Structures are given as structure tokens and as C-alpha cells.
Length: 407
Image 1 (cartoon, rainbow, N blue to C red):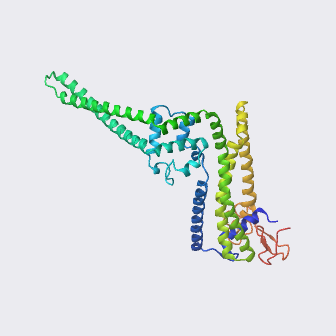
Image 2 (cartoon, rainbow, N blue to C red; image 1 turned 60 degrees about the horizontal axis):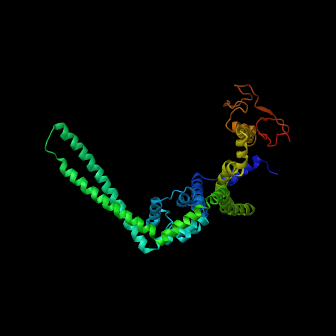
Image 3 (cartoon, helix red, strand yellow; image 1 turned 120 degrees about the vertical axis):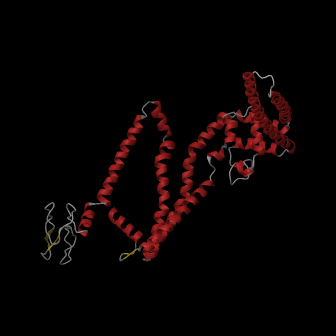
């Protein structure tokens, strides 16, 4: 069975060499890295598109439904404003890929209560008479808002002119014209207010709007039950989302792994090189999702009851103690693997010998010396086979080529 070190060296060789005696050129490495970047971008793009097929918690209960049902903020004239915004809004204001928030395909994704609410609003939208009244109401609201701004500006100018005339003790006043303009604006605003009141009465008396109000009251009566269902959906959604994403990632990783295994058996060096890179690239998103599962989903979702228990007992600090000790344990394991397996003492000694340095202190040695002039460590010993002196740090004798490392 291969050790971790041998496996690491083997994987490194497959990623950086075409064969044992043919290293990958820098130009070829650049091409391979470009392929890696392209494939990784495509994997993440595909992952996003695949995840978008899943009904998110914001699609399951859109903000308008949360406001109407959970927050109970659709009251009085505000309810009329909300309906008006929905039925007169262009489709692009909801989502770039959706025709309209009231589109049947979008409505199907929502909670049953929200489906009933949005379908009722859609019925209002299909009523051409009331739709026209809503359009006239919107125009009247915009005109009234503009006239109100003009009136406030005119009133500010009037007040300023009046103060200036008083300070100058002038009998002649320029405020008459301003006063007449303000009076005219006030009359126009009052007329628009009467029009808006008439529109509101027409809207309230409309059968489809009255049916919507009745449906909303009925839905709000089930508010507690709906809220519990939303909490349950919000709780399980991240786990469901991760499972859905793994459904996209695992077959792709498995396909690259199968290609890599077949290439190794057939000893097709070029295919081994490319499939090894693709296998690593496809595993990176899986690693991210596993980390997300460990750091986010498990502690905040599956262990939520444990959190609640610790909080109720006022010993939440215990959870942080556990995390600290786990971090220390993982750090010890990581350092052990790095020091003993990846950057082992044998590996360091080999690099020092290759660079002509002392295997003990690493400093550059003068030529033809048998002991380090800096630390005094002896560099050579007799070969057990040919008895000639060879390097202590080497694995094979420089004279006879025999293995000098004891079994």
C-alpha cells in the first residue's frame, strides 16, 4: 500500500510531467493552466445555473408575500399602492429571466398561500376596467407629488420675500404674484386629491379587488401555521441546496476520475496529464462545498437544537471551547502531515545535498571536504558494499551505486 508521501509524489509527477523522463515545458504548462482556469469557470457557471433550477427561499416566499402575510403591512391605502405597484410594474423589475412576478410559472414556485395571493392579484390585473383606473391613479399620484414640490418651493420663496419686504419697510410687494401662484397650485392639488379619492372608492368597490381583500384576510388567519412552514423550509433549504449541487459536481468528478484511471492503465501519458489536471480542478468546488457543509450547514442547521440547549442553559461558552480545541487538534494534525509527510527531514536533506550544502546546517560546502567547516558534521561514510567513502545523506553509493540505506 502506497504511503501518503508516495501518493503525493506520484500525483505531482502526473501534473507536471508527461512521463518520468519528460518534464512538462513552460509553454505546455501555460496551456494546461489556461485549460484549468477555463474548465473551473465553466464548472462554477454550470453550478450556478444548476442551483438556479432549485426554488430558493426567496422564490418560495417572495418579499411581497412576506410583507402581506407575515409582516401584515398591507393595510388601508397602502394595500392599494402595493397592488398598483405589482400590476403596473414591468416584468424586468422582478428578475432579468422572469417575464413577470405574476407569471404563472413564477407563481407555481411559491408557497400555496402566496400562490393564492398572487393569483388573486393577477385576476385584478386581468380586469381591464380596474387596470385603467390604476393607471389613472398612478398618473394622478405623480402629478400631485410634482405639484406638491412646486407648492413647497413657492411657499419657501413667498416666506423669504415677505421677510425681505418687512426688513426694508417697503409698501410695494413682489409677493402678490407668488401668492397667486401658490393659490393656483393649492387648487390643483386639491382637485387631484379629490380625483384620487374617487379612484380609491372605485378600486375598493371593484369585485376583483374586494375578492383579493377577502383572500388576504383568510390567508392572514393562517399566519402562524405559514410562518412555521417557512421556518422549516428555511432550515432545510441549505442542506437541500448542497445536495443539489453535489448532484452536479460528483458525476463530473467521477467522469474525470474514470478517464484518469483508464489513461493510467493504458499508459497514455498525455491523457494522464490532462485528466489529472481536470480531476484536480473538478475536486476544488467539491472541497469548497465540503468546507461549507462543515463550517456553515452542520453547526448552524443540524446542530441548531444543540445551540438552543446551550443558550437555554447559559453555557454557550462550552461550544466555543469545543471549537478552540478542535482547531488546535486540526492544527497539530496539519503540522504533522506537513512536517512528516510532505516536507519531511529526508526531503530537506535531499535538497541540501542537491545544492551542495551541508545536510545538517544547509550551508554551502567548499569542494572536496568531508566535514562541514560551519557545524563540523561529517559528510561522508564508508559504503557497506565497496568500502569507498560516499555521502551520508545519499541513498546510493557514488562509486558502486548500491543502496546504502539500511532496510
